[in-house]
Length: 157
Image 1 (cartoon, rainbow, N blue to C red):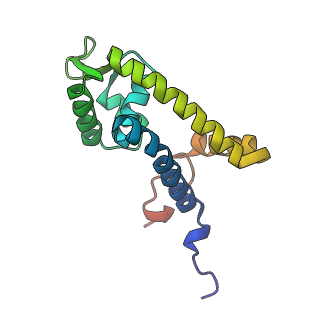
Image 2: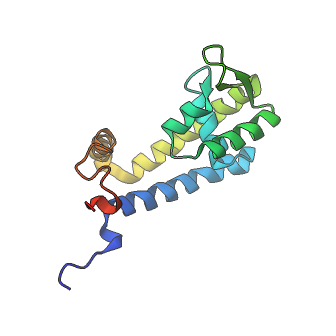
């Protein structure tokens, strides 16, 4: 076999591994400081961007099951970090919002996230801007490539 597949050289695999490592690295801060899970952190991060967000909207923006988002939201609500209410726009939706406690917590989390981002960018060195441009290009084109929707590894069946 002349063209063997090398998983460690496969870009999607490498990106997934890197994302997991970086996420776990940063998670140590919010887990130790606030006892938050990764799902809870993601819910809070999204709520910090808008006054109210539905579970459906969070699910659509992140790679996380609706059930995980819902469970994280329930734990955050029980802790007094967020509120849940029925949407005024669509009575079928539950919207989430940060409480004052959640907003204060998010201020500290935001600073930690910015510090961590600066640390990661410093690790990249002079290649940081090019790396971000490459990520942006992949994010913009993901799902629109010729392999999208063609089944496993883009093969036609």
